[in-house]
Image (cartoon, rainbow, N blue to C red):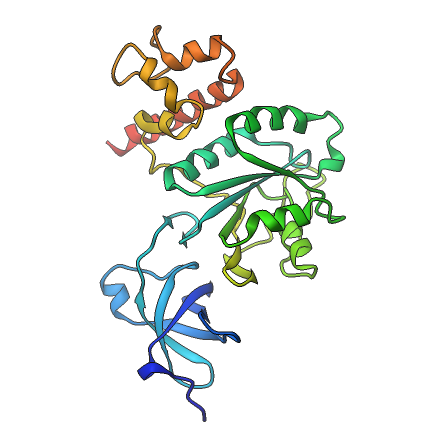
Length: 305
């Protein structure tokens, strides 16, 4: 029976998977890192702290690649739903059809990335099915704002090399509605079947969610991809409705032109954001989605009280 403990048993790792509170912890700072199957100390439950995928941890080995997590290191970023820590870049995948582009969801996610203070990439997948040329319009809107956009055809590998370069030296979380091709993209990046690929329901044209737990895949040193469960529970409730405009990139420098402090940018007449729309500096469709999101946030805030 062998013991793999070093430095008095203390080792550092990153949690790459979690199934029923049994964690996969990958040792870091080693040329040939080992993945350990680990449990968490009971005191975490008392302290109401739960280790999650992406956490950097201190752990000690027991035997035969088994380990115990002793400490969760400071989190730079934490997402409640789905539970994920320390990501540095969100990769938002939308498809041209089956399912069609969900720009409302995209804008929610982009606002959340701004709130978290992390980078974001927009991936336009299934570009070969874009018969209505919707991607052209989407690119015009979001590139003007300053977002990086990559077109891909995951099934045949088109755009994968460019995407791979954009992922380097980041802990990346792939998000998007079920069926947009996240799993297919990840399989194309690794050139092997890393994740189960879903089928599109012929009846309702919505994706069947095949990813049931978060897994962190290592592309190369310091570069990871998190495949998340379809973001069906995706929520931006942490952002208050009154602050939402601060997380729309093209709105931020227009707020100072509002006549009233605390302008909601909805009903007020002398609003800097509305003036910018009239001047063609802000896309009207994106503003309309902003209004929908702010209304959703307000309704949830009212229920809390």
